[in-house]
Image (cartoon, rainbow, N blue to C red; front, side, top):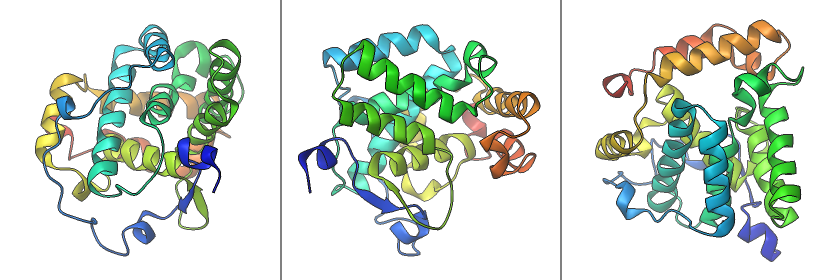
Length: 237
């Protein structure tokens, strides 16, 4: 396996979480994991994209992106410690995965938000910030596929972790992977600010503008209703 595959999280993982978990609810019972216990990457690239995301994303979307980073890292540390990637690469994917949902970007293209956002992320990282192309492409691939939910085939390590963490934050999926105290600590640091209603409205907005959008494959009503009815996160809204 090449260094780039290991470093930037390209290794193939099953797309179906039940295959990852071998039919169980988790690999091990989760333990509390605090924000303070997870080191945020502080490279020049990481800090630059963090600043970019804070500028470009709304506060609710930025907070969601940060929660996805910490939830994903909790899953990585406790459930799949053998998965290989740099935390910097995963952070970049988290910060940029919803770039396509900003008002400017969602109405600025006919493409589905994940694909347009992935292109923006690829160009931003490779051209403006001169990230290694293998890293920029890994982030773009994860952004493209972070809503590519299914039971067949494979997905990259970064892509699968991004899926698990976004589904957890958006719909309360895979709730047995993360301890309740971790949710309390992460949402205390990065509040939800009525995220369930906010993201459900974004889904409906895109589906209204683009009835062909990839998001419709998750259910034109089932998906936004599932986001808005996220019972796991209801106490933290």
